[in-house]
Amino acid sequence: MSVEVRPVGTRRELREFVELPFRLHATSPQWVPPLRLERRLFLNPRRNAYFRHAEAQLFLAWRDGRVAGRVSAQIDHAYNAFHGDRTGMFGFLEMEDDPEVARALIAAAEAWLAARGRDRMLGPMDFTMNDECGVLFEGHEREPFVKQPWHPPYYLPRCEEAGLSKAVDLYMWELVIADRELILPIIFELAEQVGPKHGIRIRHMSRRTLRADMDRFAEVYNAAWRRNFGFVPYSKEDLDHYAQELQLVFDPAWFMVAERASDGETIGVAITVPDINQVLRRMDGRVLPLGWWHFLRRASIIDRVRVGFLGVKPEYQHTGVAAGFFVEHFDQAVVRPQKWGEMGWILETNRAMNRGMESMGARIVKRYRVFERAVSQRVLTPG
Image 1: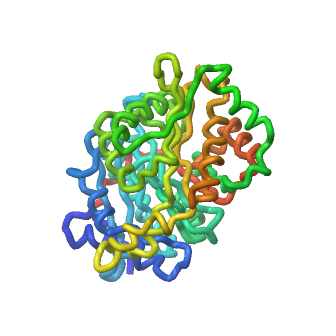
Image 2: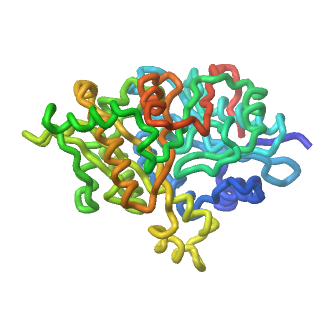
Image 3: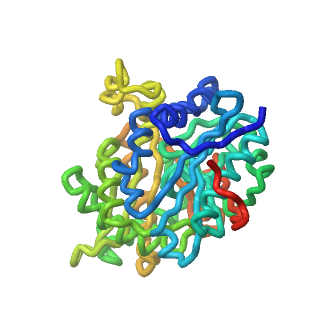
């Protein structure tokens, strides 16, 4: 039977979209089931702030009456406004090990984007580069951390056979943050100078100040990451949504702000998230009947973190603030249950950050690939 790709248009089809990874990966020991309720809310245009500046369409690939794959096609108008181009994205890619399914899904996403005037397609990303993104092609034997996708090894060749080309690779670095012996002495020397030499202090966020500190985060992010691949500036609505997400995993030990002591100017921000995936594994995709109990016990379950954002404004990157953040992480690991984690993603082209990770004794444990493809204006819209 041939593969037919159709837009998701009913509640039943949305349920099939959410459930497909459970069927494909349930027997894989590394895969961590997402919370079904959270996925449905995330995909809901009325609940996700992404849709204030974007539009998207979900697709399912059907063969012989059953779902064989899924994909999204989306246009982030904020991305295009910032970069001045006509890029579209695809994401939420899941598929059986079948080249025909992969080709049909990518073709459907391309056709939807072509009908809306896009000339380039990037992905996968769910929905942005700061959500789950890329195809895992190294590190399949390891569990994904929070907001990391996991794919079986066949995903990479199926994507290549579908006509996708490499855009950039993303690295995840493992860092044993309790092991100070692996760190080059220069890191501690730089950290010690942050206060006395540059007048900069590092403080921890609180739950009460979290939303206000997200504005500080955006100030740093929009300055320090603006030249990064896939960058999109955060809007107020994005920050409102992001702050709500972070409330569920907030731990003041790992959320930090560097600021100038004289006037409180924000210099840098570090957001490190306890790996809630360790809890989600026990919840098995459900809040009831016992999922809530595991969530309430998360402090006794989580022993690792993901360093998601660590940035300093460009004009202060000579001050050793990044070193100060890292040393504060090492100090917290002495007294907290979390002793290790992963940092990233980090672009393969970010030589300074990759060298910095090497100086702290870290090692690359996962690699993800983001693909691109020119969008042909001659393709027809599916469905």
